[in-house]
Length: 138
Image (tube, rainbow, N blue to C red):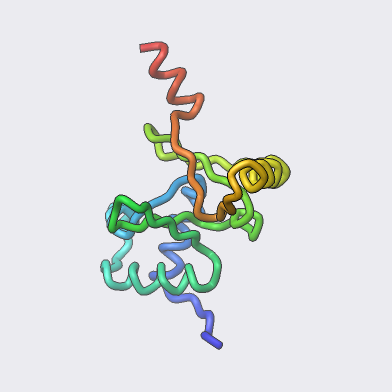
């Protein structure tokens, strides 16, 4: 079993991701933001810690089929792995569909299309209400 211990760099990464728990970031974006906050950390350390945090179930990794760049989101609780995520293409905000609605949708897809969806890997992309209202009011 892997030891779970916190180092300063790991604390920086966790702190940043908790502050932005409704967004996803790639490692370079995390690095740039943490450095801009005044913390001393290197890119290799972030890669190493992100892999560790993913294995611990603290981060959800998303690998788009059309990209080599993975993004990560902080997982506040295990429920995050059992529902769909909506991502705003304008601001990057991630919202969650409730478990009941996700399960209803999963049953419908399985019944109609004979297809099993993995909710933890499913992001539905669009424009959130906040960004839509800004766009409409321009």
